[in-house]
Image: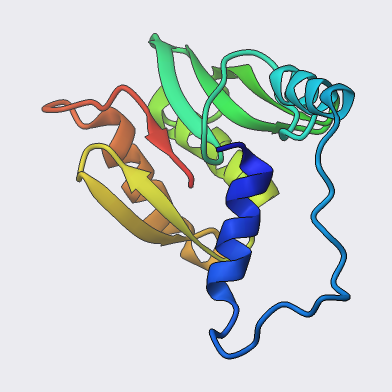
Length: 166
């Protein structure tokens, strides 16, 4: 059974049983071989998919620590890139600067990225906790967000490989 036959069968199954199709209803248009080939080619090329660049990932932004030293760090962020208007994996380099330590500089850099995409409450998929956590990106809630992200990425007992913003 091809897709159009399946869709038509599901459509008929949803109709109430007392309403029979009228004889004046147009017959289902059969897909030509050329139209079928074009539909398959378009699906294979991903023309209906959301544009992305680089590694294919699902969900929203993903943060992953790559390198942390005394005065610099590097992490990956997978999310929307305004420059090329696509989801991409971006390498973010952070310097300690005026922050008391590199962990604080990394977390505050992540908070800036989160705020570019979220202004209020959002769900964070925590691999450390094994569940989704509701967090706030509001400036008034800086302390809580900073404490959570610090524990999420710099917990010495169990550092997660990556955490997601769904």
